Image (cartoon, rainbow over all chains, first blue to last red; front, side):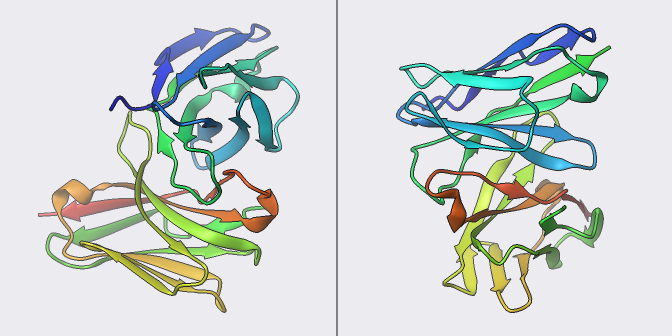
Length: 113
Length: 115
């Protein structure tokens, strides 16, 4: 069974640009969550999608958005990039119930110059 | 505010000994707790979880203890092995989420198991 796949693994962008990250969940999983990891900050929850609807949202500005497709694949978009957006962005999938363990991808390392 | 805290950024243990990783939380609504392990350049991997209705859960070498009155949980690894060297994250979710999964993570503890 294939794991959670995130593309690309690495991205370099400049301030003001926008970026789109992709996540393919484990087959059968309908929930996809996104997290941002920065040094010393742990993992910060961005949002969760289930059946193409945003079900939960973290405390990030509106520049961070996402969507989920009918096949459960998800994309995350960051517009007007800032230097502070440099981070590892992790996607996680689960079946979609509550209090489940999440399965994480290897992440996309975003560098904003 | 940091609702889940791992106050020890690093821990060094000898192979074969017990590793104890600690985690404190402030949100009394948290009802499910998890531990994840993370190697460099990889995503976090689930280790073990515990519901707030329990105070202990075991899985092989890993045991998680939950003390609700102290809002404290700990992960015990016995015996520790060199392959356990990684960053360990404590995470929690709360019933107010209203379904779904929204985990609040600690900042992690780097465990180093020495030969």
